[in-house]
Length: 307
Image (tube, rainbow, N blue to C red; front, side, top):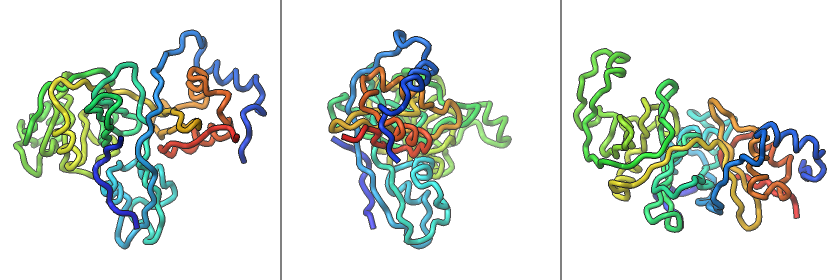
C-alpha cells in the first residue's frame, strides 16, 4: 500500500502520417482562422511529480484518499472513472494523479492558478527553482473566480469572515461577521489579493477542495494553506488562468494533460493548433491525441509517434 506523501514540492496506434492531410488542415483551421495570429508561448519542459497507485482499504472513500495524497475531488474521480468515489471496493487499485504539467503563462508570476484543473502552483524562487502545488476549491457557477493578474496585498492569521450582503441574502440568519473558529469558512489563514473580495484561504469543509465550492475565493486544505502562508509574501504576483489542456516535451516525448470541464471543453482542433505552434505536430500520433482529448483523465499522457 502506498504511503502518504508530504505536501508537494518538486525540484490501436495510428501514425499521424496516415491521417489525410485535408482532415488535419481542416481541424487546425477550425481552431483558428489565421495561424499567423497565433499567440506565442514561452517554451517550457516543466513536468513535476509522478503517478502513484494505491490500494483501497476497508471503509475508505476516494475523498479521503484524495486528501491524503493532496489532490482534489474531481482530479481523483477523473483519474479513476468507473470506481464509486464514496464506497469503493476494498482492495481496488486506484490511480493517484500526482503528476502535472506546469501551466505556461507569458509572464513569470510567483503564483499561477489554473481554474480548469482546480490547482495552484507556487514558484517561491522563480521559474527555475522549486515548484509547490496545491489543489483548490474555486468559485461556483454564477460566482466564478475571475481570471486576471493580481498581487498579494495582505496576509491574515485567524481571519474573520465579513459576510458579503449577497451571501446573507442567500443564507438568512448569517451574522455580518463570523469570528475565527471552526465555523469560519476562511479557515486559519488567508492571503488577500488586489481584486476586491478575492482571497486565497483555508476551509472548514475540506471535502470541497477540487470542486466548485466557493463564492469566488480560492480554498485550500487546512494543511496546505498553512504551508502556502509561510512561503508567500506580500507583493507576490498571482495569475489566474483557464487552461483545460497543457502540453510539454520530456525526453523527446510529447505529453498532453487534458481536464474535464463544465464549459469550454477543449477540442482536438485546439490541441492540433497548439502542437503546430510549438513545432510538435509532426511528432504527434493523431489517434493517441484524440484518445487523450476524449478520455480527459487529467494526467499527462504521452502522444508521440512510435520511434
